[in-house]
Length: 270
Image (cartoon, rainbow, N blue to C red):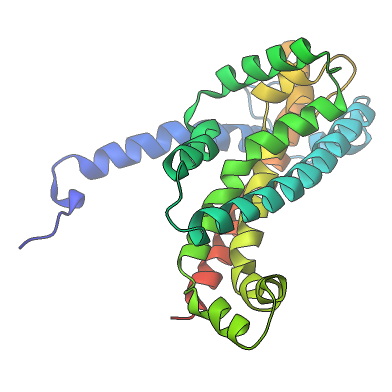
């Protein structure tokens, strides 16, 4: 029986190139023009790093520095909390057997990924308003923790599904408690998946704009919302430089998450 190979179909390669071009050409344009020596965003007049220097030392550097600090601190705390919750959820879902409500539980965990982000943002804002929760730094953190849980859950759950339950059973047969079996046996084997989930949740929180823009309140900015606010006043080359730095950092974190996941899969005991 012949295997399905989409590359054999006429036009597959052309469509693939077209999709990649539409997705990444705008990013390439932003990256190229971030090195433009001119104030123009349409005319390239030489290579310069002046706009990268402006990001760190220019008139708006203080605003961007504060926004970057907010973004990184929120992302670290949100990713940490989301990873801990996702780890507990993965253990319950994978090691808990077939319990009543398991499909519904999985649907609830996965729902933030499937529901349009604008719907989640509006619902979160309405919920915070209904309970009288003031909008600001903490509201962004809470919203990001909830939103990042399924992104952390997926790699952790996938890793755990590849680990045989006999490892924990053997530890318990040797008089280890459930906690010690998890701490000394299961957790080290799960570590690549946990780290991969943390990095994925971190970058999702760091790059989020829609939910953040709805629940941030007045006077609090993250890097994506600060960039959006600056763009509304006109696109300037320093915004392109800042966007390029954020893009490169995001690529680095996603690549690191992928490599850690691959390393864990390669070392996964059979």
